[in-house]
Structure formats: C-alpha cells, structure tokens
Length: 172
Image (cartoon, rainbow, N blue to C red):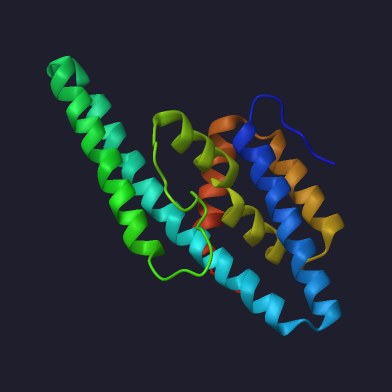
C-alpha cells in the first residue's frame, strides 16, 4: 500500500499501525473483551519498554557525542554501564509479568544494533496511530494522509510524525 525507499522506521511503523488497527477492529467485531484487554496490556508494556530503550539510546547519544574526549576503555565501560542499567531497569519492569516482554525474558545481550532495530520498528507507531485517529479510523483517508506525509522531505516528515506522536494517547 505504501513504501518510502530508505525509510525503514516510516515503513515498519506504518505497517505496525495498520496491523494494530486491524487487530482492534477484529476484536471489536468478535466482542472478545478478554483478548482486547490482553492486547491493551501488551501495548502498554511495549510502550513502557520503548521508554526505557529511548532513555538508554539518549544516554548513548550523549556519550558518543563526547567520545573524542574519552579513552577507548572508558568509553567501552560507560557504554557497558548504560546497557547494564537498561537490562536492570527492564528486569525490574518485567518482574511479575505473566509473559516475556518485548525484549524477551532476559534482555541481554544488549547492543547498539538491537536497540536500533527495536526503535526503528516502533519509532513512529504512535504517530501513525494518531494519524489513523485523525482520519476517523477510515483506512482510505489514513492511507492518503500517510502517502502525503511520505512525500515530504525527510526532515519535515520526521517533524510531522513527532508532532502526531506527541498528541497520541493509548486507547486501543
């Protein structure tokens, strides 16, 4: 339906938002309250995990911004500390969850590639879900709005997605 060459975060987030809306509509049509509540719980857990990953990613970005001023061993240690803190925070967050969270039962080993992949696939999902809401949950209108968004230059597209995400509140 929609593909933007070179923008994995846009493409995967768009697909995930469509998937979630399809799930929401299917659960509503079935009147399956238990599955609906389970899906909502999973989305909330995903959002909590995303916040942890975003915090760790921001810390890593700040570290890399000053990497020229650090000895390689010190840089590696700080990086390991950030990943260790993320793993600890995730374990605390998931304690008591009946099923593994988005990073699995044990999040380690954590690395830049794993965090980047997690973020890319979920980065703009709240924005697309807000765009869907703004489109009255009408797929045709949503696809057209997303297509127009995809035609914007990258910086304008990212800014528009960020503005949409800021307005999003979970209501699955």
